[in-house]
Length: 279
Image 1 (cartoon, rainbow, N blue to C red):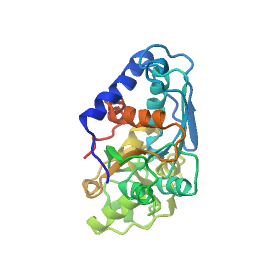
Image 2: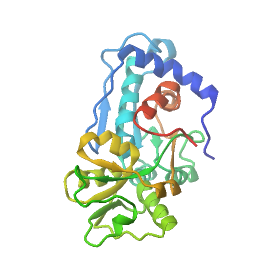
Image 3: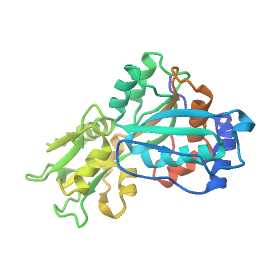
């Protein structure tokens, strides 16, 4: 079962993350792909380790589209809780699930869809029911100037247009397939990538005329791409669930991170990046 956000969880999370945000008031890095970590060397006050007993380290496995927001939320949580460390592994959700199923040392999992989270819960690998904390929709990303003159979803099928999609097993690829089916459009991509950041990378590198990514990816890319909204995207709205994992060696900190994401401070970070509220 996947839960919606509840007020009681929000109240708990505000204590940790909102105070942390006030204490530091800064974001974190946003390099593409791979892993990232944030350190807590400057924090003081807030929901400190001495106040709630939080300490030690966790590793969060999260969808690639969450890189910027989760890195900031992790840094805020660390600064509110001296002595803690939140590390990340960002990749396509399906790849992360495979790693978790093979015993990778993860404490928290956040997926870009419920389908991949269901694979984890089906094997009873979470410590509690997942919580949906945000949603996202697709947008067409094109290089600056839009050299292929793409103005609609149907334009992605034009002869000679180089389009990059996510692979069907990846949430952004599954969403693209749903939109294609709903619109009666058949896109022939020049490549299928394993994460949405890889699709964006192909577009920003000039290796593609267009790619289907999330609205948040276009916003996060700044001037390196142009976004083209299309009405057919409403056929596939991805819900993002998160859960602490049963195998975690630091259950308290893992749960605190989940609370931070679902709490007021985390929700504001996600909204600022363009994520829509949980459906």
